[in-house]
Amino acid sequence: MTLSIIAALPLLGALLLTTLKQGQVESIKRIALGSSLATLAATVLLASNFEIDRPGFQFVESYSWIPALGINFQLGIDGISLILILLSTILVPVVLVSGWYESEGGRFSVKTFYVLVLVLETMMIGVFAATDLFLFYILFEAMLVPVYFLIGGFGTGARQAAAVKFLLYSLFGGLLMLASIIGLYVISSNQIGRTFDISALGTLQIDNLTENFLFLGFFIAFAIKAPLWPLHTWLPDAAKSATPGTSILLLGVLDKVGTFGMIRYCVELFPDAAKTFTPLIITLSVISIIYGAILAIGQRDIKGLIAFTSISHFGFITMGIFAMTTQGNSGASLYMLNHGFSTAALFMTAGWMISRRRSSTIADFGGLQRVTPLLAWSFFIAGMSSLALPGLSSFVSEFLVLVGTYTRYPIAAIIGTIGIILAALYILIPVQRALHGPVTEGNDGLPDLNRRELIAIAPIIALIIGLGFYPKPALDVINPAAKATITKAGMADPLPTVGGEK
Image (cartoon, rainbow, N blue to C red; front, top):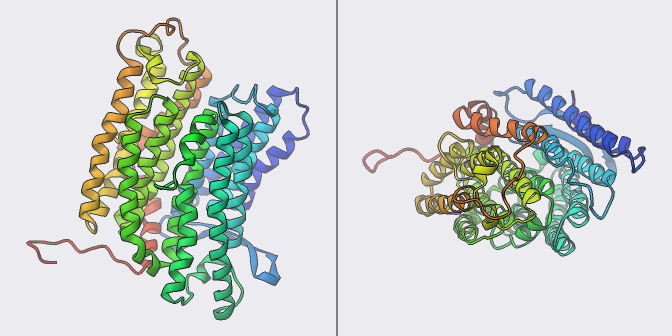
């Protein structure tokens, strides 16, 4: 099974959907779900053949695309890109099952919704597998189109304004990255010939000033996508306006393109510039951790709460990346995976709560544990995972990030731990308000999770618990790639100190 075939499967499903009539709603949903499950099965098969101890990219494909410009359709994966592709292919069928009726009543047809989701899945797989910089950029920008229509066409509230804001922020970052890509292309033409191969681009000799400017073009684009403070303001609006399923894909997968890009392009292509800007980026990361947590504490809207917690979490991920240690990088990569699952569980359960109560205000959900125990416990476990409770998946990744950061930037790591204390507040307070206490008027008789919803949430809860107790399979895949990234950046892990001496 090749990467190009896996990426093509959801696209083929989308093309098949276009042949169906608008009124064939159940057939549309089932074909879309079947296509996403086939993609997941193919990805799992690919992962089973991944050689953990083998360095570099695997399953490499390269086809001439625009030879006059040195552009190839080139794919390949390492451990970090593999886990993100697995995350993408797991969450898409979960989104389709959990939001079986989510697409109905939108501005566009049900068929349009599922076509957009499947096209987006193809782009998500492609952006993580691309090893040609031009191909990566095309997919990075093309992903904006289905997301724009998913938010603006099927969301609620000020969905049009949120979709436009998301698009403008992302396009601005994309233009800066394009300028840097053109600069890289000119330099490569003078040194090694026209190429967009990221392995070849990593060998370029670039003067410090030029490298700094090229780095900033990429970093700002990825910081917007992640998002990192102060480039985060599009996210709360998008998360509040989008459907829960769209929010899962947006925060669970698409935002990871930003942090993945920081590893693959910012650190590996511009190692000297990455070192130059590391103190600034670590500072921004710490601010994101604290700022996101404080704003989350004050949220009354449940989707706004999840959005601001994600800003805090992305601060941890970015801090782990630019700590420039193997532990920090491994922790950040694992954090991307675990955050995807915990965010999916939060948005799924929040979406079901909102659809039952017809409100997204946290105070309106009082006493749910007495009325809908399965829904309440699912939300509780998802919240505890976001809190990084020991025994759940996020704990291991957050611990690795803090330990990896402390060895090089102890003050940043110490301040970052305050975010853990604040996380207890922004999770436990809404849990208390929504799940416990007397049953709020209007909550009597609310239905608990049905079989379809249980099928959707069960695998995510199982992964959250399983990776919490036994993260070794994921770390075995991630660690070699994380170590290779630190080596390419020309860094080494700090030596342990004993009695003040190394």
